[in-house]
Length: 223
Ligand SMILES: Cc1cc2cn([C@H]3C[C@H](O)[C@@H](CO)O3)c(=O)nc2[nH]1
Image (cartoon, rainbow, N blue to C red; front, side):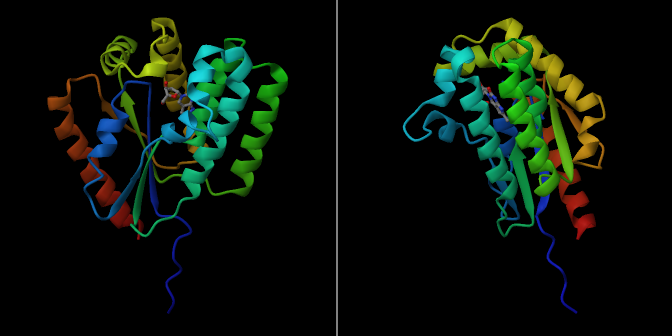
């Protein structure tokens, strides 16, 4: 009989604060043929039709938060809908952390007026109701705000020069709430896999390998 191909690959979403080690985690999967690892589309945000929306947002969040988060929502939806052949897709962040961590933060900070937040929210609700933006596993890379901030300063990404410790602490709290409030159950039934990504990289890789094994086992289960 025809086996009905699942509408999407076994989907893993990697969530975590800025500087929590997501890129390092994703790179572990880039070598595996049965996995397609999709990094956050930062390059698209840096060049949206010639505009560096990421830089504009950090330079003048009041003026550009709406344009930036609206474009993030579109690019994240494209990532959710990207269905390649490999049976497993690992995504860096999601349309969900965009809404519940970053949009929430900009709104709380007063950079996103109520009307803008309402429009973003209407799009988000419609997308969740009509598109398949669900996941099979969520991996949460836990760090302290201090560790995250240290790594951001080390990595020294140009647009992130102005990031303050307060911003990272607030984002940390929003990620903790997003992950631990049960909100993720709306788009992923499985329990969140948490990795203590506070360690330095050498201790982290064995943890990544352990997590990779769990992902491979769960996805095999899924077929
Ligand atoms: C989904 C989502 C990711 C994301 C990243 N960012 C920022 C945080 C980092 O400085 C940079 C790359 O993650 O983009 C943001 O402001 N809003 C976002 N929303």
